[in-house]
Every structure is written in structure tokens, then in C-alpha cells.
Length: 390
Image 1 (cartoon, rainbow, N blue to C red):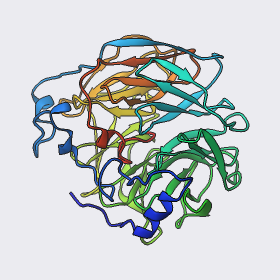
Image 2: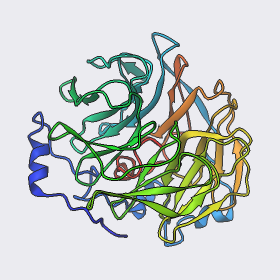
Image 3: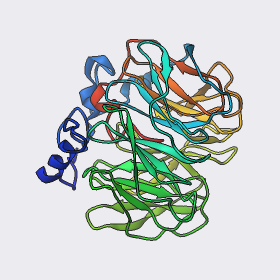
């Protein structure tokens, strides 16, 4: 696997060390000074026999092990709060992104409690995505206010830049190999790059074309580039090259609206769709080829999809009452038990202990799936390839 085309300079690592007296952390923490995602490092704590044929075990049988549902004892002060995304932190806790709330929320899975960290986050519908930074801080991607960065070591919040223009123009962010964050636009033709070390914001190179609405998502590729999903059916996706600061289109077009995406262990990308009665799309970025699943998702899907340790994929429904677990090699899917209030949970993440926790959009409790004991390694879970809005 390519270790990446973007090197991290010692000078930049020094800046990370001096940022609020936080300990230096590589971009893929804990790991090497690059963003390489080595799925074989999962070892006995996850897929016990990963080989070059990554999905060999689920090709032979449908495992679908994430069907045990649990409801946390942690509750929220108001059922009207929206937390549409979040990030797994270095200590294994989950910090939620305040979309329709003025404060964030931290969930501690070890003690099954939620706490409200310090700092306020401005107006309603302010943030839609959270990114774990190399030094352990969390960057919240702005929609209708300035960017915020939460420091879990000092329990403080700082602001970077001003309100993006036009308002509501950013949806999600991808951590690049030099520690900056590429912010993907929703209603703008230009992406932004937030530099949390130098506390600066600038326009990224390249111009997006076409209609813009909630549909963009990005995935960090092993070569350091970023793939961005198409925002409507029948058009190309994009590649952003951080070395040359350029944006280019894929040769392939995508038959459905791209809503969420994630890097799979075989280095292809799964792209979910917001279109009702659509398929999921598998994009081979090395060959620039798009394939669609035979399985049809009647309810469509939302931005949330997560690779589970058994090789299957949790996909959130955009309008239906249930989530779906999809097997990418047998091309089959099952409905996850338990209703979710018509898209109440739009995203989630794996925990260190092997369970999957959902980010509540309008519910008053945290809901999750799975049992303790089967998980990816921490290196994988905290990697910028994995720990992001999908």
C-alpha cells in the first residue's frame, strides 16, 4: 500500500507539539507519520486472518453479527437537539457535533454517561461534521458560523476564521496528511482548507460545478488525495490533490446521487445514495470504474455508513424506520432490528470495545448495536481514513 504522496515535515510536527502544550500526535494516531491505513494491522482483535483476499470470510457466509441492540442510560436535556455527526476521540470517548444545539456532548461508553463540555457553538444548524486532529483536538466543520476547535485536555473551545460564504456552504471535512482539513462545499463552488495549527482558513484550488445541496462527502485515499462524491445523479465525482492544490473529475459517472462514502479494506470506495429505490455504488478509483449493487434500497440512504469488524456495512436509512446491514461480496442486505424514528440517527461510529454507537438527531438517548469484544485496532479506528463523516 502506498504510504502517501504528502510527507509531514518535522517543522509541522513541532507546531503541533506547541499547540496549546498538547502532546505531539501523528496524523494517524497512534501510528506512523503518514496516513497509511493498513487493514492487516487489525490482527486477532478483529479479522483474525486477513490476507490479500480481505473479504474471504464473508464471501463464504453472511456473518451479520451486529444485531444486538442496546439503549444507553445516558440521556439528553432536550429531545429537540440535533447531533448529526461526531468523532471518536483518542481516549475512546465520542464527541457529538452540535447541528441544532449550542453546546456539544461527550459520550463515555465505559461509564455509560454523557457530559456537556465547555464552550458554546453559536446559532442553530451551525455544524454538520467533526474531525479528529493529530494532536487530539476536535475540529467542527462550520455551516452558519465560524469554525470551532475543542481542546479535550484543557476543556476549552477556540474559533478559527469567519462564517463561510455563502452561509451553509460546508458539509464535511477530511483530515489531510499535513494536518490541515479539506472542507467540502454544499452550496458553494469552492472548498475551504482549515489549518488548525496556524489558525487560518483559505480557499482550496479548483471549482465544483453543478447543482449543490446536501450530498457531498469525502474519503481520504491511500495516496493522499481526497475523493469527493457527486452531488447529483449522472455526473462525475472529484479528486482533490493537496500537493498541487488541484481538483479533477473522475472519468466515470455515478448513476445515483452520492450521499456518503467510505474506504473499504480492498481500497475501493463504497458510495451510498440519497435516491429512493437505488443501489449502493462501489468505486474502484485506481481503475476509475463504478459498479452498482444488485440489492436495491427502497428507502434510499443517508450520509451515514460504517464498516463493521465482521466486514459488513451499517447503512442508515434516509426516510425509513430501520437501518440496513449490507454484505458487499454476497450483495445481500438485512434490516437491523429496532426502529430509528425515520432517520433519527444519521451517523455513528465504532467504539474501542467493538460496539457501534449512533449519533442522535432528535432522540433523547444514545442507541447502539453490537457486543463487546470484536473491534478494529485503535490505529484503524482513529485513522483519518476511517474516523470521519461517512
